[in-house]
Length: 106
Image 1 (tube, rainbow, N blue to C red):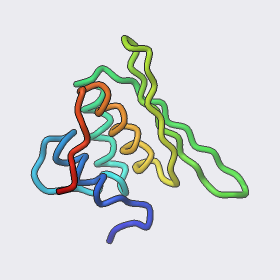
Image 2 (image 1 turned 180 degrees about the vertical axis):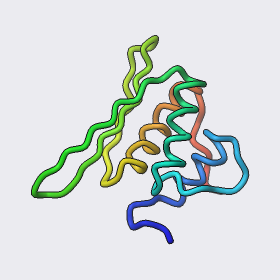
Image 3 (image 1 turned 60 degrees about the vertical axis):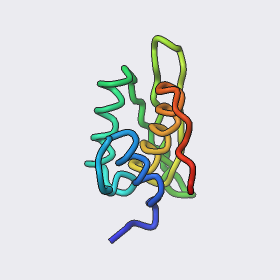
């Protein structure tokens, strides 16, 4: 069952573009698959991850940011869950670091 805080299109991007896999996994809704993305970003693109959570009366807010020390560049995203924030930030980092264009929806 998919979480209300998941993103099917982003799951597909994570699987096919960043992870270079066929099929998809619940990257945006489960921390295990999202952490595989973190490990690949660290290994392949030499990124560091900072993950913060803000708790308060308005609920949770996760902030994930990949930092590339050689480019002094930070790629940040916010979401209601850690996996979704991680995947959003990973996509932003990948598109810049890999010099890639987002795939078109044909």
